[in-house]
Image (cartoon, rainbow, N blue to C red; front, top):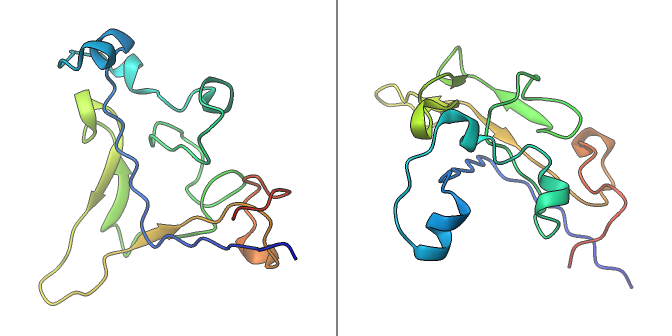
Length: 129
């Protein structure tokens, strides 16, 4: 029997360190410009072992094919902004108001999924165990 695993993440924040390959090999800090922060460009070919990548540099809507199946910005409290990420790249800014228990978020699903609502087209024909 095939196990089907549905993974829902209430908040997925993938912080890319934008380090050069040399810095990774030497385990030293590296200064990178914003072009180096586009880790997710062609990520399926460069990193075939990854399931998903979002460095928030895309101008596509947060909710859609290849991205999240739900996104709520809580009236602007959870948004993608320029210059708030590493080396002034794009990133997520979340503001919690006093007494608030949630400030927006986004949900991701990947793999074979019995719910069309949650299917974002991310490895939709594969099973994860």
